[in-house]
Image (cartoon, rainbow, N blue to C red; front, top):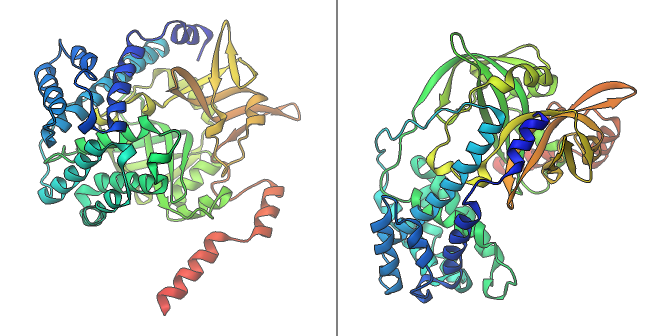
Length: 457
């Protein structure tokens, strides 16, 4: 990212963004108190916002019915859809601003491709629970209401076509259970719970969009990886550039995930991905990957399979970013992913001054989000502060742009050295970390041994 690009991105915020987010907040406040107690005038601005859109009549009808106390699944579906449409508009404005500043071309979403058959009874049960949450409000949620979803979630988890909805409902129920009694909480994660509720309501509709894929064969040049770690799960999301014969380079992602427990932390996390040795080896040793007939979704996501990939020669991610990143075509964004919190665009910056948690390029400064640096890699805030080049993910959060580093170039003994979040994918290379890990023991091996012992009984 050059100073002129940064200036263009940070100079003027996308128009209408604060106003759209204020409208979302008004709806979210209704979910806090419960739609059964919402004021008839609470959603006045919300209805006006859709006056010139195809949703105008349906939004107006839904708001009128809800204010009158007649709350049906259809009205809640419209409300969730309108909320998502507002976030989609914010997302599109911000991403369009970023693409224009970076000179990045982006594919358009191809549209629907038919409905997949789903278990109607489980979808209806899911909608029923979500309706009760909306009517009661977050402040009124109790143990009985949370546990009422248990049977539906268990049955939905057993249905592969409903796995995404079931996982979302399971996570929402777990959060509500952990926060009980919610009525006594000083501060609620209003926006987050609103996001989870509205997305679940949209996923719980009859049918579902089929997600077509095309097999691709070519060379994957890895830029870096983002680690999404929670107490019970971890995901490695790899960003790269795909070169295929006869086509322009494309920005793509691929992800692998694994369940975990909260005692598995730090470099031990990589042990959970032993089933993907080709991918881990490429991340740790900075190798190219030759892929054959690997499914690619319209969203730019490669469905990873080690069996369809082979490690190639080394490739410096910083050289890849300098040469190819600016001209790589970006994928389309799926409708349900159009949310500002989901923006995560790979960028390359160099020639900056790092100070006070920010990079300064020319006359502009962008915040650097070092809180997202994973504990399973060697990249630290100190190394980021001492760096002079960075591959990062451009994000938008809390009203402004920020940069999440996934790799940096820094000087060690007067030599430029690249440090990546994935350098320990095959095990830590720092002697101090190796010694500390040996002293602490192998948590993954212990847990596997205990699990095997239980299974043998």
